[in-house]
View 1: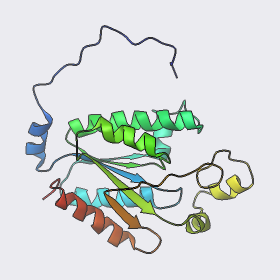
View 2: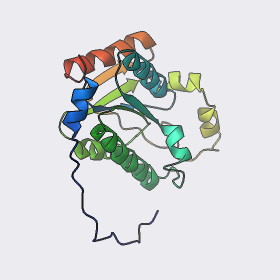
View 3: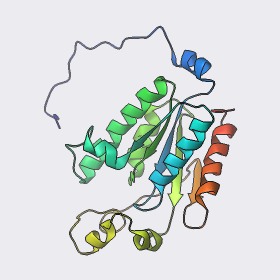
View 4: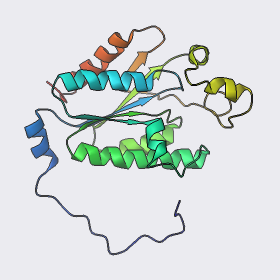
Length: 204
């Protein structure tokens, strides 16, 4: 992971002449990070993409950072140890921050099981830009869905450090929004996220 490499002392942050506010003006909306968190199978990716589709139809500029997709490229060198999970989330946070500077509404769909890691990303961003959305779904429901067959493998001991089985999930204490993906429909959850964005003045 390059942890032993020294940071360059010859790097200077370049301030652009076109600012985030300029991009907000041309887009007709503000940028923010919608951070969907929850157990595997809780519906994070499904909800993130449903929200993106709704925002796209409203002519908003969006991008979804999905856990599996990111691990194919940006984080392909990382495993699932606590240390690697922390680094995974740190990288996502930095990418999400850059995308907000580009004026984009970013949606991230990661288990991101540790409060401390999510708070690192929250603190990376200006106040109000990080909207933590808990996809609240009981473990037994997630396990019953088992869309990818991961819980079955985890129960068999084939996947070590699997969140909810052999590794903890730390739910947020005060998320900006909680949706119950076991009892609410996808449409209801999507509408709740859109309403949050309107309330926060991110979209009209």
